[in-house]
Amino acid sequence: MVGQAIGSAILTAEAVAAYRPEIFFDTVGYAFGYPVACLSGATVAAYVHYPTISTDMIARVRSRANMYNNTGAVARSGALSRLKVFYYRAFAMAYGACGRCASAVAVNSSWTQAHIAALWGGEPAVVYPPCDTAALRQMPLARGRNSSGAITGTEEEKAPEVLRGQGKEMSS
Image (cartoon, rainbow, N blue to C red; front, side, top):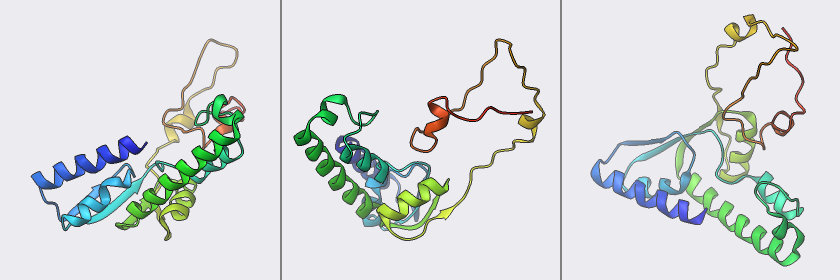
């Protein structure tokens, strides 16, 4: 994660050196380029879909849960778990400091809002992505046939019960 953070700051520096924007508008939420954009004189605005690190990630490592962000070897080791919690907390502090460079912040869900507020401070606005579900509600759901569906762009932390197959069945 640190390598990506450094890389994004370098990429931002290259971008603002080539073109100095008045407003640097990030639509990802990878905040490590924000201080660079501010130093270039730009006002930073952000629309965050998913935080780079979340308080949930830190809690899972602290609880020594064996999950996607915490391998079994780390989860079984008290020393490795403490080291990883320290790394995550330091990374979260740096992420928060960089995020606070944004003058305006919006997020795409209440889950993301809670995490960005905890990490960056403030009260980000929630702007839900446009999603017209009227056509989806009109689709007949065939039971017992070979059919499948997909939910894309859903992170496990936002909807763990859906991604683990424990979600409620859709009804027509």
